[in-house]
Figure (cartoon, rainbow, N blue to C red):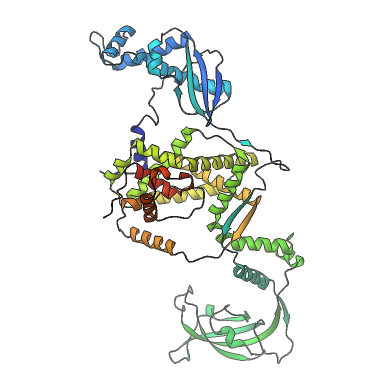
Length: 578
């Protein structure tokens, strides 16, 4: 049996326990006149709602339950679908062990009909997930009488609100966030080269009147060039196409500018001289008939000039772009040069921003959202295990409610932290009016669509587009926060990482088809917001043997360790030595 994808894993997981989405029949709803409900706030963004369903509502809900059952039950003496008296239905259900089933269904119908409108319209709250009765419907059903009022006490998760803390001297507490992250040093050599190239573009030429001036590095000259292919003996051969030669060609005497040999052959020449110069065309030349070939040019020097590179002053910066100063020019150039290197450390930067955000806001995270995110991460881990060679049958054996609940326990803190940052970022995006250009979304969607097509997978645009938009929006908000932050960067040199190289080698072997053990495949594919040192599966397993379950400190663990221990405690991993 092949498990096609992570969605099937989720469906299997959801079908195996009451801890996941319960089944409830939905009916068309009609407005119900209610007395005002009362609300009590509970921890983790949950509420307790007390509401009284009037007799008219309890009778209508009971009648609906009877009508629905009549459509599907077969009772001797009644046609299927005919209206069957309630007492007959109850007797029939009692004979099947469901004495109060009709009344229980009526109570569930009341919950579905009354709770959401009360939360939204009376209290301005957005419910999340399924409400649950404080007293189970099966118990309430024993005293339920259709046509009589029924008081219900219901718990439900609601969408949380962010509370921004007051920060002295700041109107917006998320501006000027402070934090620290590490990255490799700025590439000064690359910056110097970029600045030098910019100055070269604005070099000033001055004609050299001295006929005896010998060209030197840094000078410029205007020449006529006539080229020939070089023979094996290093002599002139077939004449080169006109495109490879030319009249009044400007040549700047500097290293690495042209084909090898040209500049070197002109050093020391004077105006009026004709130099025979041997060159080698670049190997990456588009014209493959010339690429890497040797040639000989007759070069006539027509004019000579000195070149003076400008100093980086405010006047020079204004020439580059109106309004720039020397300082702002260097800052922009530094940012442009560093942009590629900086991308590598964006996760570390965002992690620092996330930590700083957590200090200026409060939000309670409902368990419904924690469960949903934990299910997605658990499914990702199972899929990763399969991709690393674990059999589908073995994976199916691990998809059990108790395994999931243990996994949820150890990843809950990281999920809550991630959600808080995510919610804060979304809120800031709305408050600051940050918008995405349409082309950015379309570029991402096009790439994902193309990958799905190549892989032969179904592309659900309606499901994928909102996620792409949310991801891009959060990236945009993080950039906004970074630009308006006071983050301290700790620069550190790259160090030789033997452990990382070993890990990369192992991954390379895995891609070539080497089977991974269950323990190795259990390293979590779950992404934590913090940048943490990755540990090898063998290290985690060794630590597990030496550390009793009761002594574990989950708060200090990496995601890899949490994933390993959750499966280990569930009996999903074979830790016996060969």
